[in-house]
Length: 222
Image: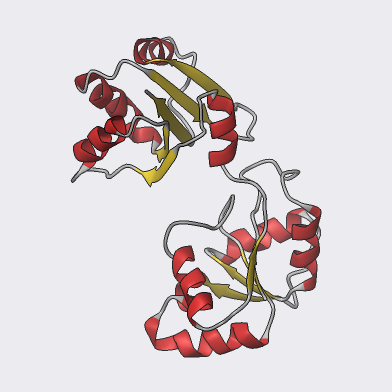
C-alpha cells in the first residue's frame, strides 16, 4: 500500500495520529527533499536510521518506472511533500498514475492543506467553486483571469507573494467589482484572513494591515 500523508504547513500539531503511526511503522519514504523529511520525523521523535528515502523524481523517471512499480507492489511506502498534502500538481500526479497503471493500492490521508481552510474562511457561497492551482506567470495570464471572471462561481488559487500587487492591478484593469478573499500564512503565527472589495484590499495593503510576505491563497466571488 502506498500512503499519501499530509504534513503540517507550519504548526507541528496539525498532523493526524494515523499519519504519525504510519511514519513510525513504514520504512520507505518518498519525498521532495531528504533533509526536510528527516527534520519532519525528528519533530515527532521518529528515528530515521532504518528508513529508506527516495526522491519523488526517481519515481517519475521513465527509465526506472518498472523497478519502482515492482518496489511499490511488494512494499508499503509513504509519500510526503515539503508541507501540506501531496496532490494535484506534478510530480505527485504522476505517482498516482503509476499506481493506477500498475494496480498498486494507495490511500490518501486527510490532513493539512491551505485550500480547505481558505474556502471555509472566505464566507462565499461555495455550493460550486473552482480551484486552478497557480495562475500562469506570463503567457495566458490575462486569458486565465478573464475566464475566471466569466465562470460566475467562486474561484480559488495560490499566488506568489511577488505577484500579489500585479494581480490587484490586473483585476482592476478588468473592472473587477466583486469580493476578493486573501489568506496569508495559514496555520502560522501571523495567519490572516480577509474578504473585501478590491478597493478595500488595496487600502489594507497600502496601510500594511496585511503584509505582502509569506504564502497566499486568493479567492474571488462574483
